[in-house]
Image (cartoon, rainbow, N blue to C red; front, side, top):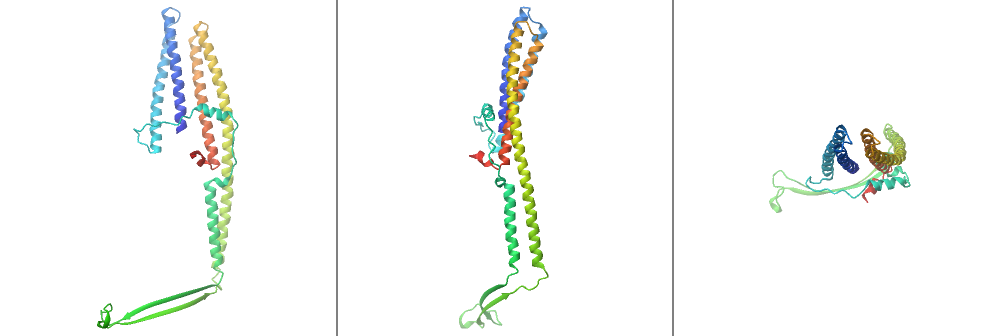
Length: 301
């Protein structure tokens, strides 16, 4: 959610930059039209594009407000509370993406899914030992002491000579030796079932290792692909910016028509947005890699 907000803020910056460019272009074309150097239709086309960009800006601002309110609800914040996002810029992601990627060391022992299976295996081992212990003889010692009273009247609780109850105490000590001989193979069946359960848990552990390892490798591949995309999109933005500046200069000199200028401006906008989106995809891939390695807690440090 935070990085979606960040990318939309960058898109808003791009929109504002394009609005500023078109505003200057409208003023330039208006002067040219008044001097008979531009057509009325060219001026109107630029104004239409400018209005479209302003409309997109309003829609994006509303989307940002909605996303901010959603983030507040996730964080348990009152809607009237001002939310200030940490000062993280997409340029920082770019620097990180341009550096050496540190994938870390993959360990399935860090994943909670695998930890649960290991704990199930441990508990099942204890259960198996409990079944096996039923084969062993057992010796138990118990003691009991009681004090009783009897009467043919309801004066048991009266004290002294006023009661007709006869009170006496009783004590017993017992020693019990239990030697298992034959139980219809019940104990053997329990142990065999415990062994089957342990094999099932072992198979689940192997499957989980394969799935988590595959997720980790896919996350690494996704990061590498997104890094390549970032580098390509950055070069594309630089090229689109050069094309736009050249086309704008030619348009001001009367060497290029308005259609070429608007097409160059549209291509630049698309390249900028694609670049920002590539940075977002890289960060999401990085989060997926951290998750697959079981190190999400490190983000809280």
